[in-house]
Length: 463
Image (cartoon, rainbow, N blue to C red):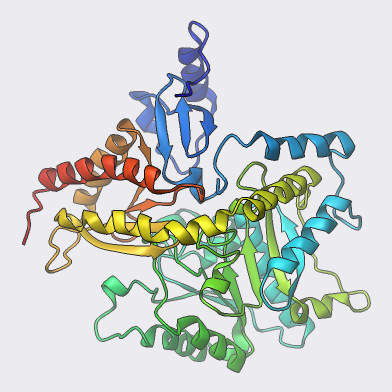
């Protein structure tokens, strides 16, 4: 078994001291680390990572839904180093370079329909921000300047920049930064386990039509949806949902943005989630798996129709980022796509998705497991107090369950996944796309005893 590199005497404590003094972690309760160590991950190989003390963990979250080809691919990293020797950086503001040109052409060839224009960013929030700005300016250029609003779904996460945050449907993420960009409107999500009273699956798309009509079609620029919604725990769409949304958007001259920061590059077993669910968006936003996170890179992939007004006369998309389309990131993305194509990674997801799902379904005999849902290598367990009534945990109980026990215990036993309550309590698993039955068995070996103990702690008993 591979081992982590040996730490020099005192190095572990030095890393801890430096991290606690200087490193500001993202989305993290920093006060927790006054009495606890910060997990410091020093190496990765395949589906596993090691911490500074040599402890080995199964990365059941692909770091953050992004290390699709697994850890430790020196060949992919080498592609970035080779590019740095040739051209370390040049901007895409009025200039171009071969890595961006060639990657844009390759991405366009893989994207569905006529999504042939690729605008690079540094990451996912930037991609969503760019798509929202693109939608607004497109409508202005085509004679509809009042079309500025965006329709998104409740509990959906679309990013943390102020524009993307307006589309994000999670109150706790929005409240500290209000007032936000105006125009963010929300409709019910596709949590089929907890449909609103009186609502049927077929009503969920109609809720988008009703909200557009309520806001006024001449004020709505875009609808933004993930193929499988992340926040809340991997909500999949009911049959026909996206086809009906497409009809609604066409009827109201509203753009359909498919937010695939997570759901693209094989996560659902296809290049794009829109292909899995057979719909045609006007825009795809992507990041994460585009490089398998070996370098930062995101993109907006837009249809020819959407790009057309910007190609006329003196019109300009008045937007950009210094590092969007960085040549090193583009070279890494090309090497990553080579791995995905040449090593049958998407085929692996399609072949073993049933095995992952069967493993998770087998946990239903634990009374705290209420629902199992998701698609591809993007799955979730919802945890409940009472399976018969679907009663969930209150805020205090959820805090005790997730942060008081599950997160730490899963990690202590060697599994990295997400215990989350942006909605009802869930555990999300999203392993590297190279994982198979051996890794799923390892995952079950941690999940089962921890969930059984969680049920005992929370006094959840069989019905």
